[in-house]
Length: 156
Image (tube, rainbow, N blue to C red; front, top):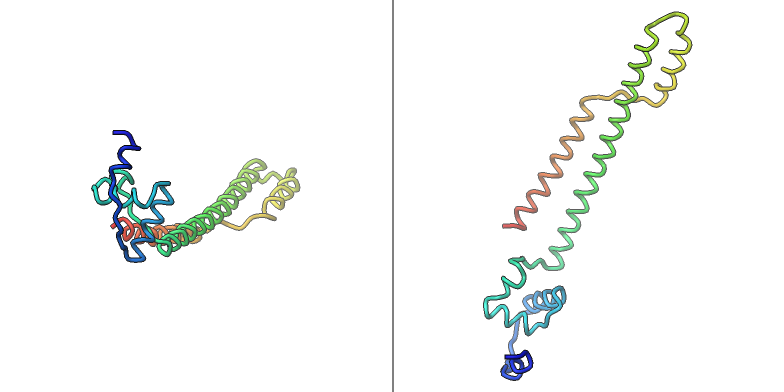
């Protein structure tokens, strides 16, 4: 049977839905570029789940909350990335300083050159502290735990 013959054999029916159900139907129809009537037909026939791939409907308010949470997670992870980068730069400077000291070995005739190189390095150095690293890692853990709790709620 062609689509045209199939459409001619259909019987029109008026159905009333609660506003929140209609909003869900409208949203699904818009997102998947199909008619509201087709959404209802698929749902009634039991094919809607196959058609949409077992997705869960998220309303606008839930969507906004999820976007806000993801934004917060990515903001916090970016802050942690920046902090870890700062720690890495400081560590690199400490290693450079150690290498300069090893290079000159405390020889008196090269002492001025060693001091000059050390001064250049020390101008930008803040010593790496293990507590700072622990704080960053703990912060990442707490953000990920919070996101995990929300994902558990979403996924049921």
